[in-house]
Length: 227
Image (tube, rainbow, N blue to C red):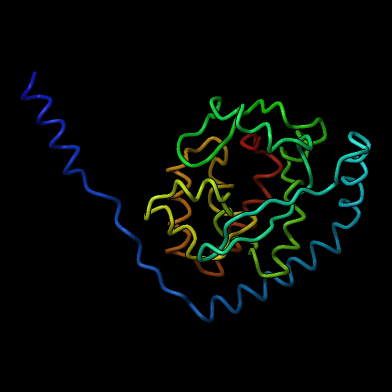
C-alpha cells in the first residue's frame, strides 16, 4: 500500500505542466479586424435599434425602479480593466446575493454558472437564452475595448484564480463571441473553455473570425446551452 501511494505521488509530481502557446501579434490582421469590428458594431447598433427599444421597455415594465442596462468591470487585453455593458437580466441586488450561491456553482474552475439562478428575472431568462442581453457590448466593440470575436472577458475575481497558463486568454482583445460560444458554451468546463480560447489565439485569421460569426448566428437559433 505504501509503495502504491509513493508511485501515485511520484506520478503526480512529474505530471507535465501545460505548455505556454506561441503568440505572435499580426499587424495586418489586427488592422483589418478592427475595421470589421467598427463596421459590424455600427451596423448592429443602427439596424437593431428597434430591438434595443423593445428590450428596454420590457425590462422596465418588469422592474420599473431598476436600470435597463447593467455594467460590470471585466478584464480585457493585457489585463486592462473596462466596464462591459449588457441588458440587465437579473435583480438589482444580484451581485450582493452571489456569495450565497457560490456553493451551488455547476462549473469547475474560475467561473460561476448555475442553470436555475434565482437572481434571473423573467425577461432575463429569455434575453440570456437568446444572447440578446449581450447586444449592448457592440458599444464596447466600437470603443475598442472588445472585438466581435475573441475570448469572453472574465471578471476580476475570476482572473485572481488564473494560472500563468490561463492568463494567456488575455493576450488578445476579448470578444462578443468565440469558440466557447459555438462549442457548448455553459455546458463546458472552465478548462475546456481555456483550451478553446487558446486555440483561437494561436490560429486567429480573418477567415476564422468570419466563420465563428456565421456559426454564432446559427447557434443562437438552435442552442440550449445558454443560461
